[in-house]
Length: 245
Image 1 (cartoon, rainbow, N blue to C red):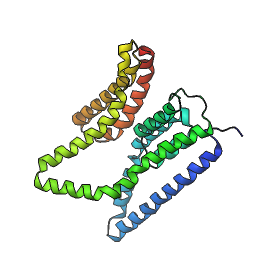
Image 2 (image 1 turned 180 degrees about the vertical axis):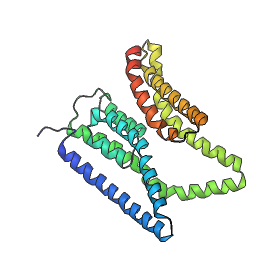
Image 3 (image 1 turned 90 degrees about the vertical axis):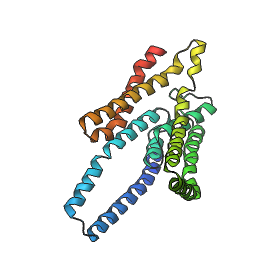
């Protein structure tokens, strides 16, 4: 039997796992609703909260759909759908898949039809690596949080600086990946500037969204700033690639 990254059995396996996750969400939604009623909260208010929460999940859902489309060319739909529906993000999944394909001599976005062994290898890299964060949280988070609280009590300013530094360090790891091929410019190729230019377009859209929120005071714009910047950034990749290639 010929292996396919979109084989029905893969959709069945992914669908079962996602159904379990959805069942958990429904379970806790019902528990939360009943607890709210038990506390004497107005049912009309609870409905407004539920509807508002459902509406504002559209924005992150758009980002997830875009991410699935991005990864689907090489990996099919089932695996990205599963990864981004449970634990994952576009930045991490793309880097993990790209590194796994590079190790096998493939180029992300230009790889031929994957074999079963290649697919399993990529899926293992994407899945096992992200599990580190799951077991690391209960292992070190309590001590880290206690240390942060202690530092904040002693010196609030340094606590804020430390938190900002950790966040910037995390962002720098991904930004470094964007700039890793810039050296190709020295070899006469402008291809390495493509991700930089795409990132610049996305950043510009995000900044404009922030300015728009500040000027208009329309808060929902900030909820859609991420998917909009993703869409425009990806769309800009087409003319930028044609220009710099």
